[in-house]
Amino acid sequence: MNGVRLAAISDSPLDVDAHLAAVSDATMGAETTFVGRVRDHDPDAATAVVALEYSAHPDAAAALRRIAEGAIGDTGALVAVSHRVGRLEVGDAAVVIAVSSSHRAQAFEVCRAIIETIKTDLPVWKRQVEADGTTAWKGLGG
View 1 (cartoon, one colour):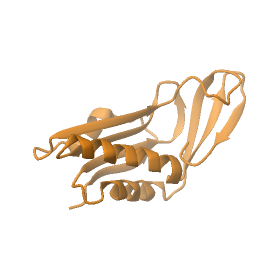
View 2: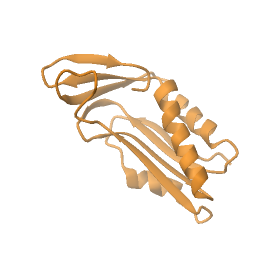
View 3: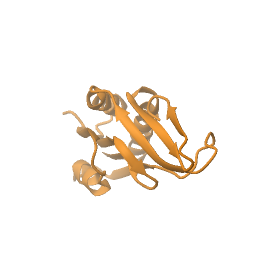
View 4: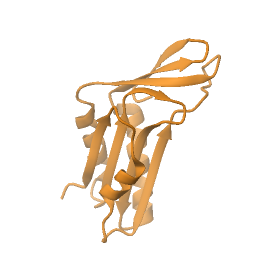
């Protein structure tokens, strides 16, 4: 059985509860989540960060599914993962991951593998917008 219950690129706000519901299963003893939010600062920014503008390659959803499948491996974990695109304000969720598994160690490992691989492999880019109007493009996965 494929353990990926949801892998989506969305221009709508991400719902943590919907991700948890997607991985809810009576056979699983552990659930973990990760929420990546837009923060108001960046070490490279001269002024406060006010927004991030995400764009994605048309194949990004398929890539996200492959990332989740790779992280699951043979663990039997269930995964729901989404990445938001468009303009996000400070505090908005850019990434939501929910993982359920038989044991907590697996849930944490799968969740961490997904976010780390998103950062290096997902074809999503972000433009950082600062309070003074300065913008800067950030690398693959942000």
